[in-house]
Each structure stands twice: as structure tokens, then as C-alpha cells.
Image (cartoon, rainbow, N blue to C red):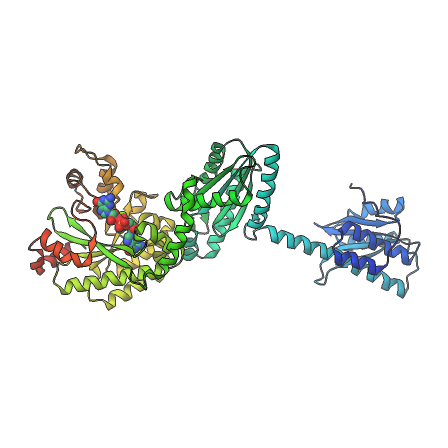
Length: 596
Ligand code: C2E
Ligand code: MG
Ligand code: MG
């Protein structure tokens, strides 16, 4: 049984003074003790206690002038779980009880007055009501302050600490570490593709994912480290007292392992990955903001260069932000300024040596920054929210180009267009393609869409639905970069695709001896068994060509035949590389049909 708080002092105060204490936010214990004293001030024989009602229990919060027998009775009051029991018990013992109710009729406590006798009269009644009001105000004020403080320091979604609190905590921990001569580690964690999940499956799923991630992180760090959600898709883990950078890496590895299992949300099974940037501070080496900046710089680096992995901070990374900022600004205007251009890379059928397709590859030629690779600016365009505009333009431009080539009677090869994650995740994407195809003077099967495998794996069911819709329009579908992501051949059979594009990573692995790499061989075999065509990209050498040909890979794309070229150079290249093809339109029709 907890001991009753002692009264602050025995002197009683005026109600206005107690009100002032409430307004000034004096401690609840002192304020309630002062309020309990008001009753004795008005009726010297009265002794008073204030109970708070929490978790279906009345707990003593303040008392004034109680006698030992009053305290004895208070112990039984504490056993009451409802106001009715309390009232009954009080009535039996001749004690006055008044509930403390908020304006929304919520019971938050009770005022208990001993020794009132039968002295009840109107003015005394009014006095007690005033005291109850004051006590209620004091408790509500405290709750409100607590609530505000909770909100100020917590993330409402996951109930983890928030960024503001973490900033303060990092400073506090660094100060203590400087004195104790210990090290501090910090990991900034970013979920990959949360935006796509929100876009495709809705924010509810995204929110639930964040909650589940928070739970897994808490389990992983136990009580050793401190976890906060920075907002959006980012979390931070503060690691006080770590012995070395290796320990930070080890702890971060544990955090990454939280993503080994799928996340089950409703009917969805999501495969999610995260990237981590880490920073490490020896005693008195860094300020709080420096440590945070380093971890976030490393995170940005990880997201860009090694998504799904850990990147410890390194000085060479600090140049990224300004560069990126400049690029961001320029990219926003690149379309208007016509700085984007499509290059085309031929795709050749091995058996016939004929041109069967051209992959459209985006180029950004900036007058000052020079040539910027799509690998750099496409993720940036996704991040700053202009990828749809860019993707739209690519589709429009590639179709228009194809119309022009058809008008020039070039052989009827297909044009392949890369589709980004954000574009593909929109439910309206298939409609958009349908619209463009309808308006264009090309056959649907002259357009191939390249969808990366990792994009499909983010939400497999949605991916399959979207692909089926696209396929029903008559356009061709290729699975790009196959073999680089969480690929699973088991999933492959469910994909309504026409072609598998083997990533150039596999092609690079083909050695000079003409033996067949077993993995590549089984991927090609499996694709054929599923009725899919196979194209290998990044073919640079005759050896690679020979091995791929021996494995029955039908089509090839790579520097061996041609590098990506400007659209205006395509007719001349065709005329030179395959003389005759341009002159036989019927033959090209036949080619087209064979590739559908
Ligand atoms: P990807 O779709 O896998 O494109 C193939 C990349 O490999 C291209 O790089 C191409 O130039 C390069 N390549 C082709 N043959 C060879 C070779 O023999 N050796 C080597 N080392 N490389 C070769 P690029 O043009 O830099 O494009 C990189 C990626 O950017 C593309 O990979 C694609 O994912 C993305 N991308 C390009 N254009 C677009 C676009 O219009 N929209 C979207 N969403 N993504 C695009
Ligand atoms: Mg591609
Ligand atoms: Mg590729």
C-alpha cells in the first residue's frame, strides 16, 4: 500500500491563490495539497483528501489534516473500482465524497471530506463545488501538459520518439560521452520504396508497414539503443557507449536483418528493404548536428549507390548534397528546355542477324553540367516527383519517333521503352498507354515496355494485374535487369510477359572459355520452358555472343553491335549494318510478327 503524500504545509490558502497555482502550472502534488487545505479553511473541523481515478483505481494524491482513522478508511477507498462503490462506502462511514468530473463527463478523481458531520448547508456546498472545480482544473491542466509534451516528443504513428526529441537526446548523450570518454554511434535508416507502397496500396498499408518495422527495430535493439522515427520513411538509432565503428556496423546489420522476412499486411505480403547510413563519434570529436548530418549524408549515399546496404560515413561523401541540389534545380527545367533526348540501341536477332528492336534510352545533355547518366537522374526525378512527366514524355517521344521511322519505311522493328517504378505503380498507367497507342499510327506490338524485376517484386499482385492490362492492349512486355533483384523463377511463371532481359551482370560473367555458366543456362532454359523469349543485354565481345548463341538466347543487345545512338543516326546505321533490310518492307512485317 503506497504511503499518502505528506501535505505541503498545514496552513490553508485562498481559492484564488490555488487557481493561480493551477494557471502557473505548479506541480500537481503541491496544487492539490493546497486545494485540499481550502476545505479546512472554510470548515475547521473538516479534513480533506483528493483521490485520482486512473486504471479503475482511486489513488490518493493529496490530503489535509487527516487523522489516523481517516487514513484507515482511505485504504478501503483505494480498493473501490467504481464511483458507486466509493459512494456507498463513504455513506456507510459518514464521509462526504464528491466526484471530480471533466466537462466531457469523464471521472478523473474524487474529493473526500471527513468530519463534516451534519453541517451541510448551501454555502458549504458551494464551497465544496468550487474546490472540486479547482481540483478538476488542476488535474486536467496536468493531463494537457503531459499530452502536449508527449505529442511534442513522439511520433503519433509508431509511438516512437520523434526527430525533435532525438536531436536533444543526441546532444545529451554526446555531452555525457565526452565526459565519460566513450564513443557514440548513429544509424540513419531509410526504407526503400515506401512511396511506391503508399501510392499503390494506399497509406493505410504504408502506415501499418511503418508500425511493423518499428516493432521489429525495437526487438532488434532491445533496450541497449534508442530508436526514433524521423518522419516519412526514415528512422534513427542512437548507439551510446559503442566500442568501435565495427560495433556500429554490427548493430546496423541486425537492423537490416529485420527485413529478411516478408511483412504481412492484410492480404499483402511485402518484400521491403532498407538502406542505412552510419556515423561514429569519438569523445569530443563531433557536435550533435554534425553526427546527424554525417549519418544522413551516408544514408543518401547508400540509397543512391548501394540500396539495401549499410554505408558508413566517409569524408568523400560530403560533396553529394550541393551537387544534388544544383542538379535538382536543373532537372526541373530540363524538359522545358528540351535538354532531354532519347538515344536508341539496336536489338539483334541472333539467328538471322536482323534488327528486331531499338531500346529508347534517355539522355540528359546539360549545357553546363554536361552529360548526366539516367542511372543518376532517373532516381532523382522519382524523388522530386517529376518522373511521371518525364516518363510521359519518353513514351510520347518514342512513339512519335517510331511513327516517323515507319513513314520512312524503315524495317518494322519494335521500340522498347523503360518504365520507372513510380509510373508503373499508378493505376492509371495502363490507361495512359492505351490512350497513346490509340492515337498513334503504330501497331501496339511495335511498342515494348521494359519493367524491372525489382519493381514487380515490390507488390507482386499489383504488378501482375498491371501487366495483364498492358498485355491485353497488345503491347509487348519485357522483364528488364532479370537476375539482379529478389528474383525468383517461381514468380516468373505468373508474369504475363513476352520476354526476359538478362542483365549484363550475367553477361559480364561469361568467361573466355566457351563453357556455359550454369545459372545463366538454367535461367534461359526456364524462360523458354515458360514460353518467354530471351534477350541478353550488355554483350560486348564475340566470346559472349558465342556462348549466348550456344545457349539458344534469341536476341542480343550491346556494344558489340552498337552503342546507343541519336535517333537521327538510326537510318544510316541500319543501312550500313544490314543493307537490304530497309528495302524489303514485307520481310520486316514478317519479322515483327515473329517477335510478338
Ligand atoms: P537498362 O534499361 O538496363 O539499359 C541498359 C543500359 O546498359 C543502358 O545504360 C545502356 O546504354 C547500357 N548498355 C547497353 N549495352 C551495353 C554494353 O555492351 N556494355 C555496357 N557496359 N553497357 C551497355 P543507360 O543508357 O545508362 O541506362 C541506364 C538505365 O537507366 C537503364 O538500364 C534504365 O533502367 C534507365 N533508363 C534509361 N532510360 C530510361 C527511361 O527513359 N525511363 C526510365 N524509367 N528509365 C530509363
Ligand atoms: Mg532497359
Ligand atoms: Mg537492363
